[in-house]
Image (cartoon, rainbow, N blue to C red; front, side, top):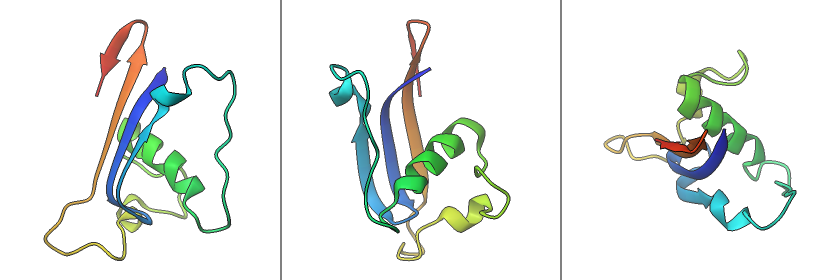
Length: 90
């Protein structure tokens, strides 16, 4: 499975964010880095949530991943576009 694009809306610290993994096609290795609390783990949480509908660990239930800053009327959404064996899935 190769992630292509991860779209987050009101998920963790992200109000609206798109991570385009396709921009990394030409590099053999990349690093997700940043200061404590910048949302690195949330990226992996979002990938797991998009695939399985669950959190990575039991100490972070899925409903706790909604942004504290989200407006009540706006949904929390995670969309993952990925490639697997030559086919794209969303």
